[in-house]
Image 1 (cartoon, helix red, strand yellow):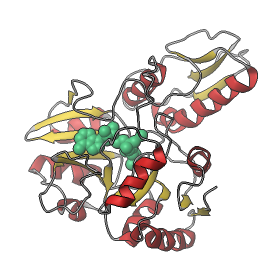
Image 2 (cartoon, rainbow, N blue to C red; image 1 turned 45 degrees about the vertical axis):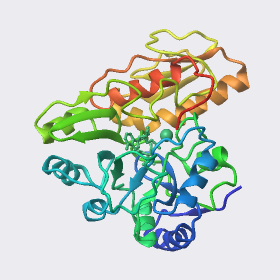
Image 3 (cartoon, helix red, strand yellow; image 1 turned 60 degrees about the horizontal axis):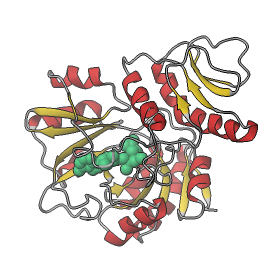
Image 4 (cartoon, rainbow, N blue to C red; image 1 turned 120 degrees about the vertical axis):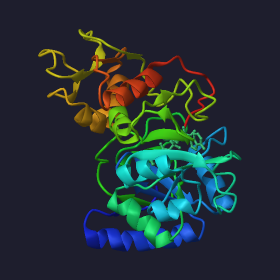
Length: 330
Ligand code: TXA
Ligand code: MG
């Protein structure tokens, strides 16, 4: 099992980040918390280190990775920012927004990390441990979610260790991820904005800053890693269920049915932000309960599509989709 070090207090974070920085600069892999989900980080400028990330995840295809940067300044060394892109970065960074932008010809980011595309995905994370690790490494960090390919994203250090075994050289434990769902990915094409993945920043907040609507991506071509079946627990999911059966685990949203024995409360208050933070941990727990008690599957209550509900429903639809067999996902 990989070594786990705490990065909760400022002193712990500084110490952990120093070690993480050394490992990353030497081409190693570090599991680290971001405000969305845990990432498996490597030096984005080191091809071999990036290749180890794909290997560790068992990723059958080289989906492009997000390069995590300290700030807009670092980002500008790797991508061409239009005025609109810069406005979005200034409004939402550090935070759960990933921008897909034209890659600069002189970016030192590994071509493997961007899968040979002429675009690059960039994000400045808000979590103090992630920020400290980038600072210590002093270079962008390529980091996909720290789960084996096709599995549910990790929101605790224990999930990372469970999923990846000893494949990370170090795991920083910064506690449970406060947002709990991956970043919103927006591709900026001139004055046009394409929503590649709904996530931790709600569509309406981005549209308010941009002053224009987000176009929804046409399909998997625009977001190479976004295949229909994804985030898949082993148990079958039934969505929009008002009345769960006794032989199902139930993810409730709002007041739960009083007498159901296997209920997980995403948010009793019906709050999508709270539900997003609980989603992946409760999917895992419900999946484990199905195994343990031989339940038939996981039923999920209807969740309104407003705010972070769009991202939650996206992840649930993927988790419920027929499996594509190959387990391709990220
Ligand atoms: O919140 C997050 O975004 C987390 C944390 C760790 O930052 N990361 C994450 O990474 O979810 P990953 O690799 O699991 O998902 C990244 C997605 C993939 O679907 C990938 O295809 C897409 O970003 N992507 C990366 N570069 C892209 C590009 N140049 N064009 C289009 N999509 C891109
Ligand atoms: Mg992922």
